[in-house]
Image 1 (cartoon, rainbow, N blue to C red):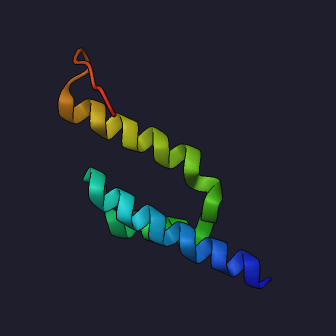
Image 2: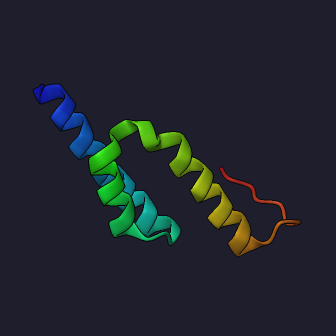
Length: 65
């Protein structure tokens, strides 16, 4: 039970920091992380990628080192 609680708290913190870093609504993702835990990771990555494409344009190339 303690392991589940720790993983939910760590994932909420991760979602908050990454959402703030990529310009998404950080509070919304932190609350979603508290409710959904690590199961939201694919959805979060899709939203993060869409926000990045929306900011840079859909025909541009993005290189990440």
